[in-house]
Amino acid sequence: MPKNTTPAAPKYDVKIHSIRPEGSCKATASANIHGDFAVRGIKIMEGSKGMFVSMPSYKSGNGEYRDICFPCTKEAKAEFDKTVIDAYQQALTQGQSATQKQKSPEPQQDQSQPVMGGM
Image (cartoon, rainbow, N blue to C red; front, side, top):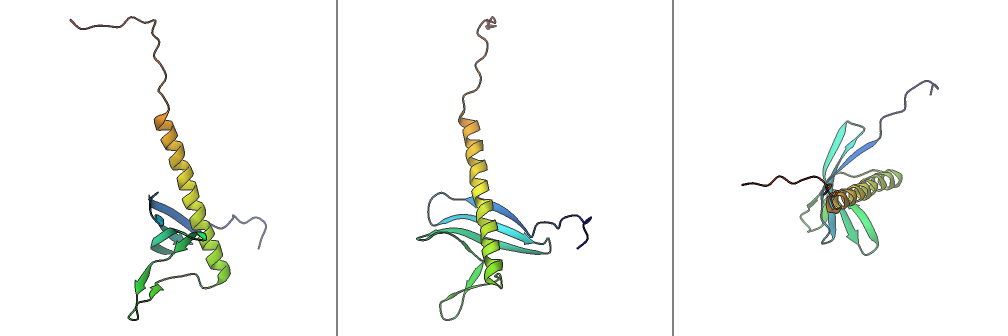
């Protein structure tokens, strides 16, 4: 690869759509892969072993749930899952920052100025 090339676009562009503090489904997300392929309906789940990514799935005739789309290698799955969970953690952090800003008291107005009253 030549030295003067620009870096490639990020592999995954993940958007967190809804965060749910209660229950095992913590959030839903979508991902664009290389800007060429979109996956909707990704779920960030809390299990007994920690957070994991659940891909969109369907219920087969035998009652099992089967993923509709999925990474093909163990390494690709690990990278995809890490990217989605990192995006979730970042969304949580940004949400907490916004909440703290909303809860912080507004600056006090200068009391030395006269207050105009109505008649």
